Length: 385
Ligand SMILES: CC(C)(COP(=O)(O)OP(=O)(O)OC[C@H]1O[C@@H](n2cnc3c(N)ncnc32)[C@H](O)[C@@H]1OP(=O)(O)O)[C@@H](O)C(=O)NCCC(=O)NCCS
Image (cartoon, rainbow, N blue to C red; front, side, top):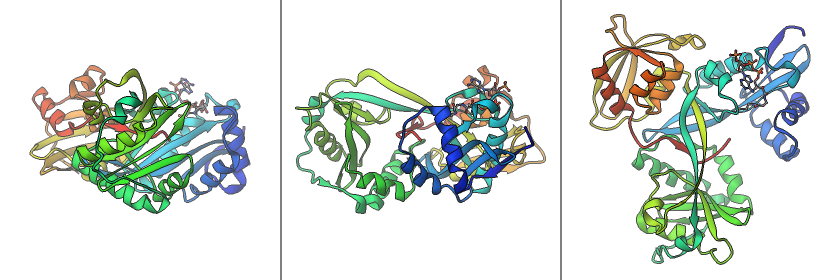
């Protein structure tokens, strides 16, 4: 083994990346589709590790935005993290992920998130659980009779991508969502032109669904009003003569749980995702906070991998916005590392973080105020990446 180096992956290395992927995730997948997609990451969002000339590890960064408190925060979505089997267990994954964190900072993503196949690697680097991806199963017949017949619903296609993004944005702003992704428009266009996806749009909402193993599967349903929710869910439920169930990715507090006559089936599937703040002041400045909640407090952050986050900070929250500024005169504030910071940002109660040793110090009187500041609808994602 010569000296291992982190590099930007170039097109000529994609065969090697594919080979490591097969050895990591198993065979399958469309090689050409993967390659086409991989090429879109070559603007500094595809990192690898080489031993001499040989590529032995790779990871990609999706250029997402993520809703936090009803505002958009740029987020680097880390995917396809693979290390060649013969190089595992000797720090290669960690070396690459440290470079990924720094690249997220350079690219202007104050947040990064991922679905972990193993938590150990990512926890060592400051990621912590922040939210879930839920899948509920409804009776198709229940959805069919939801009504909404007075609402005009039309078939949608590729040309509606910008409209879909706009309708989703309005909805997440109003609901003060935390967690859902904003995909690049080109990705939305490619879903909408995929003949296996069925998309419909109303004045203030849309649905995208498809067939999945004999059932209908809703990837996303956005509705700005009760009538539109009824109309769009009923459109999907109209397939009930063939599909007995409708699997839907949606949060546990989606209005459909209050509209459908029977509760969703208990086979709710949950994938947990992890979050990390790469630029703490920017992450605080860009997210939304609850209106009417006011807080002034000091924090001590220790972040060994991204030292710009390390230091004494003053957190101010008022009028739905927050700021994190360095302070030379810290009061006895909370002490936390990147894992505690990520979990706090995602609304994990401070008492739970103290219970796990992720937060220490400070005054318990401030705990409930911090809980109130970071509270909001439970963070969730609809998509896997
Ligand atoms: C997961 C993977 C990327 C880790 O790469 P690696 O080079 O072995 O990681 P490192 O040597 O830097 O290990 C970092 C830490 O993670 C731990 N770790 C690595 N793989 C692990 C596993 N499968 N289970 C539990 N812990 C693991 C290591 O023990 C180490 O912790 P330690 O310092 O406390 O001992 C690699 O095993 C791999 O490619 N696996 C198959 C594909 C995969 O699962 N990718 C992740 C997708 S999210």
